[in-house]
Image: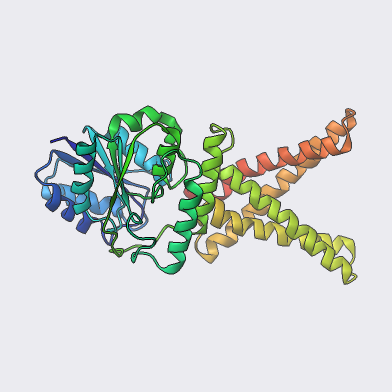
Length: 362
C-alpha cells in the first residue's frame, strides 16, 4: 500500500478542524500517512488549537504550518506539498464538508486505474449538491463550465478542493502553481495538461463550522487565474481584476458627471463629486473582488478608503506628470495620455496592494 500525505489548508476552521482530524485518523489509521495543516494566520487561532492537539496527544504524524507571510489557498497547498514526505498527496478542505471515507475510494481508483490524478467530484452523479444553496450551486455550475473551456480533460468538477495525486507531479509544476488563487486543482490541470484524470463521486456534507469562502470574488479570481496561466504569469490574477474594477470606475465617473452636468451643476463641483464616487466604488469593489474582503469592519473600511484616496492621489500625479513629459517630448496627446494612464494604474495597483489591502497593515 502506498504512503499518503494529506494536505489541509485552513482559514478560521477552529470550530471543525479537530473533529476532522479525528475522523481522518479513524478512517486511514492502517495506512502509512501524515497530515499537514497549512493555516493562513486564522483570527480564531486554528493553528494554536491544532498545535495544542498535537502536543497533548504526542502525535508525530500531524504537522501545522502557521503562515503569516503569504495568503491564498493555492500557495498554501503548494507549501504543504513541498514539505510532504509521502509518495501520494491528498488535498482536502478543513471545514468538514469532505468525507475522509472518500479518501480510500480515491486511493483505490488511483492504484487500480494507474491514473495520475483522482478528483473527488461533487457533481459526477448529480448536477447539484445538497451541501450548497441554490446560489452557490449556480455559481459552481458557471465556474465549472468556464474552467472546462481551458483544460484538456473535461471533468464534472474541475473546481473541487478534494483530490489525490502523485507528489512528484505537483512538484514538477513548480512555481506555476504558486499563485494567489483559490482553485489549485484547476491550476494543476491547466499547467499539466497531459496528466490522466479519473473521478469519484464524493459524499459532500454540510459544513461543520466556519464560513464559506466561495462567492463572486472567487469567480473573478478564477477568471484572473485563467488569464495568468494563458499569459505565463505576465498578467497576474489580482492585477487583471484590479484593472477591470478601474474600468468600471471610469464608467461610474463619466456617467455621474454627465448626470450632474445635465442638472446644471457646475463642472468643478460635478467632477469633484464624480471623482469621489468613482474612487469610493473602486475601493469597495477592489476590497471585495480583488483582495477578497480583507477589510471587514466599518472601521477597517473607513481607514482603508482614506489610504486608498491617498494612494490614488499619488497615482494621478504620476499619470499627469508622465503624460506631460511625453507630450513635451513630441509624443502625440493620445499616446502620452495612454502611457500616463497605464503608469498610474501600475503605481496605483502596487501601492494599493502594499499599503491599503495588505493584511499585515490592518
